[in-house]
Amino acid sequence: MPVLIRGGHVLGSESGRLALADVLVDGERISAVGPHLAAPADAETLDAAGFLIIPGFANAHTHAHNNLLRGLAGRWTLEDLLNHGPALNANRTAEDHYLSAALGAVEMLKTGCTGAYDLFMGLPAPGPEDAEAIARAYDDVGMRAVIAPAVADIVFYTTVPGLIDLLPKPLRQTVESIRSAPTEGLLRLSADILRRWPGTSGGRIRAALAPTIPTQCTEAFLQGCARLAREHGALLHTHLAESKVQAVASVERWGKTAVAHLEALGLLGPGFVGAHGVWLTPEDITRLGDAGAAIAHNPASNLRLGSGIAAVREMLDAGVIVGLGTDGAMSSDNLNLFEAMRVAALVGNVRFPHDSTRWLEATEVWSLATRGSGRLLGLGDEVGAVAPGRLADLVLLRADSTFLRPLNDPLTALVYAETGADVDTVLVGGRIIVRGGRVLTVDEERLRARAQAAADRIRTANADAWRLADQLSPYVAEACRAAVARPYPINRYAAPVS
Image (cartoon, rainbow, N blue to C red):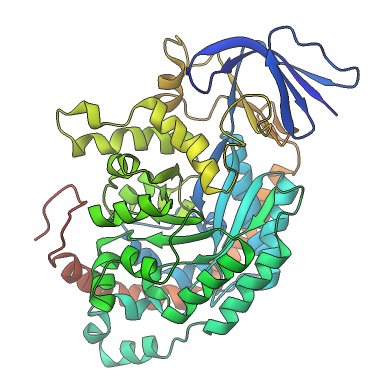
């Protein structure tokens, strides 16, 4: 059924200004934008008077599995989070994965996000039934998603420089007894998921590859992922130079940065996405730009975990495609792209004291969350603007709000002031998914109740894993402090390292 959105203020993609106009949606795409459009006889009409009409956001990097146990991270670094991985993610059923993914999809939709790149995890690796559950969750809720099993064939503890040597014998024996999933099994899983979700649900759900962290992957696994990407024309997403520990470990293992190693293995290219990229060297940034590769910038997570401040200005200058992500709810606490925009707009300023020409402008940050992230999801220029021919992924915001009035500059207000609280209506591919602030496709109250019961059960079931993580924590911290004290050609912290 066609949808005519009548009498709203449409945000111009290039000008950033508002224009009073109607938007006609026919099928999954916008067919016309302009004043006083004629409504087809069978069209549903939405009265948009008093609303802003903006393109939906795309979340360039998130993790469905984080949503069930959000709020448990304390003063954790990335390595603390990875140390607690078994405590957070073990003993999950396919139904748990469904609930966790659906919970995140609801949150994203209600804050104006219509698409997500989701790197989901399971222990020791997600199974086909877990992938099926996550794909079904996004499909049921009605969101657009690229889903990728985040997997690795090297145990995390062996990748932290000096950690194993610090452990007392009983803990060392315990850690050394942990086995990773087999390389060939992970490649078969990844290939199976690529075959099963080449673009199902009208193209809304697609699969990708995610060798989760390069230092946790053997060369055989990385080369296998590169082969699968070529064979299937698939996107590939990895956590890249997120922390200094990872950067130091890369040089220790390969004698070069992770970017240089991945380039040598043939992974860099237009379908490559590196998440975070905090500790990229200038040479790394040039390599990524030259390869047509992309970075998913996660500013809130980078701060929450103390990883550092990414050099986004330099990335954009080098032609790197940059999208905006929230990361998972375990490391950034929410999946709100409005908050991510605000943090992204602010955090880089301190890198260029009294040189505001190098700061990100509101227009640039808006582009990261819309066009940039859309490109990372493989959508090219099909999203990110309210214009004829684009996919009808649209958001209606209440204009008469605390955050948007007086409305002097629309983009500045949206990037710096709006919180997502004013999202009223959301369309994905022309289908109305959120109306009056309520998701129409699922019973939100029942979903939250089921998710709470699952979270309570998982926390109880993983009590032993929590105790082990607590025992390992001081040794992980000591090894990481020693690693980050090592010389490195760049510093992305807000203070000197000693």
